[in-house]
Structure formats: structure tokens, C-alpha cells
Length: 332
Image (cartoon, rainbow, N blue to C red; front, side):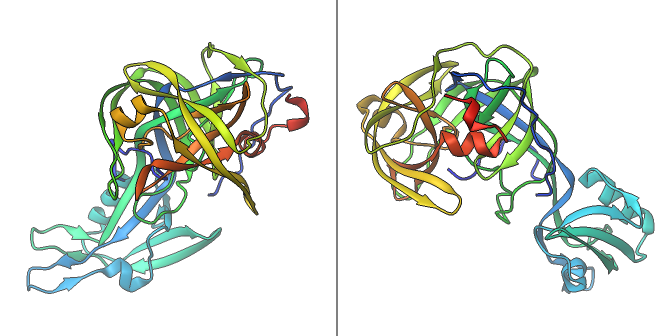
């Protein structure tokens, strides 16, 4: 469940830090499904392709010039671009003339001179698949009732082809509901199918990190309030929405806790018969489902085992708070 369910445009240079005055002693527990809308800071190269020309040959001028998947196009011939349409328009205006692409790769800005080729149907193309935004579904993990800071997903939003973290220009979470479920099975991750209400924006996305997305809520997030705690091996529950807008708890078992350089993680298994019967276990769209153990909010679901949808991974709530730039000493 590393990827959110992409439903919109196919298509980290993040320097934003959330400024939080003082974090509440208790957090509002999430569990509700939300729509996720993101536009990128530049135009991401999702992949390269071969262009079939009128003489029957196949060329990829951008790849030959050195452009790679994951590059972020920031300008064409010195003109800043904010969307894929800007790149397409600039290339078309050159009518076959070489264009200068300025891209960001690994924190460095590079320049490539690319000469378009004419496709069999008469278009001037560079041989690139471009993405400038995406939309999908995820699960809200928590919201701080005092500052309005929220956290969701428990993992970063990545490009589905390159696997790279999507550089966020701006984004939002919106109201959403689940309309159906594709249950997971061995070798085939399931997914929640839903629709987002773009007219009801709940908050802005300001950070896209390895431990979740974070931002500022625009509306009051009502719900149960719990102190935070640490995960331990034993029974627990997750809060998820698998139908409509109503969330509820389902029983799980935390099987193992392990610590790595990037934080504390856990392996868990779904034990709730109803959740297994309806979804097969953990499915795409449940990323961010809060984990409650011993009456405290301890973490969030992040991934599912492709070979066994009843098993998955989790991130600790402390790592999510740290990724959001929140002083944990101010939390319970």
C-alpha cells in the first residue's frame, strides 16, 4: 500500500516546515477517508518513450539527450513551466527546433538540449511521459485540536512509475466517501473505491514526507481524543472507513516491533473476521488508519503484504509527529 489510489491526472525539494505553537496533550483520532489532491512543483518526468516517425524508425530524443525518469522540468527555453501543458505548448511552438530543458535532479539543476522528432501523425514530440499532479484516496491519522495540524497516510506520496517522492507545490485534503471495495488476495492488493467532494476542502497539504503527509486543517476535526503512546507486541485495533463515511475499529495483532535508521516500525496482522470478510485485510486507501493500543494512539497502517493482505506494516505516531516538525515533548 505504498501508493495511494490514483484516480486523476497521470501525470523532494520540500523546504516547508510546519510552525506549531504548542501541541495538545491529546490528539483527535482520525480514521475517516479523505480525498488527496496534489500539484507538483514543476513537471515530473514519469518515463521516456520511443516515438514512431513517418519513416518507420523509433526515437526517444529526450532519453538520448540525457533526460531521465524522476527529473523535474522547471523551465523550457528559460520560461518557467507549472504544468505538462506548458511543456507541450513550448515544444510545439518551436516547430522542430531544439529546446533547452532545465531540470532538477538530486538537488542539482541541469540543462539538456533536446531536438524534437515528428511523429507519424505530425506532432513534434520529445519522447517523455509527464505528470504535474495526482489525486486519490487516503486515511486521516490524527488532528491536533489546538493548532489544527493534521497527519495522514503514514508514508509519502510517490510517483507510481519512478517510485520517487512527489515534489509538492500545493495540495489539499477533501471530504470523501467509499462506494465499494475490491478485496485483496494473495498477489493482488485490493483497494477502496470512492469519490472525493472537491467542493469541501478540509485542509492544505504542506509536507510530503516518508512518514506521511501533513498540513493545516481548515475545519474542526471532531472525534475521540487520545493521548499518544508507544507500540508494543500484542492486541490492538485500527480505525478505518470501508463503506460510506463511517469509520469504526477493527481488531489487529502487533506481531513485531523493529527499529531502523528511519524510525520505529511494526508488523501487524488483521484478526477481525468482518474486516477480513469484507476487504481481505488491508487494502489500498487504508494507509494512515490510526492504530489504538492500551487506550492510546500509537501509530498508523502504512503497507500491506502483497502475498498476504491480512498482514502489513505500521509507523509509530512519534515518527509521524517528528516528521511534521512537532515538538514531542509538548505531546503526552
